[in-house]
Amino acid sequence: MNASSDGDCRECQEFDAAEAEARRAGDGSRATDCRVLRRRHLAAEHGERP
Image 1 (cartoon, rainbow, N blue to C red):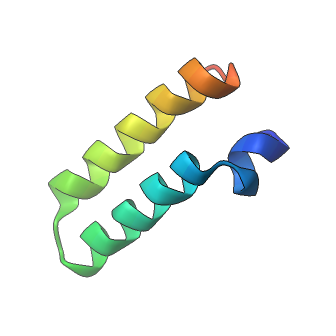
Image 2 (image 1 turned 30 degrees about the horizontal axis):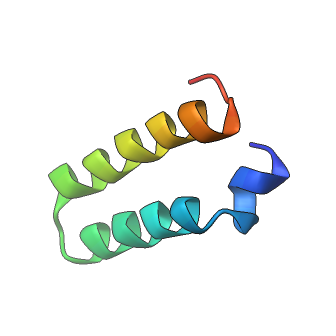
């Protein structure tokens, strides 16, 4: 990860928070969805390869 995706990007932070909340709630499917959406965001917005 680069610096912009690691802590500075609000959208990345929101995906991380949503994943953490899903895990706390025991919703593995939603947690997986958050990880997939974050990876897509990283590729589209930060130019990172999956």
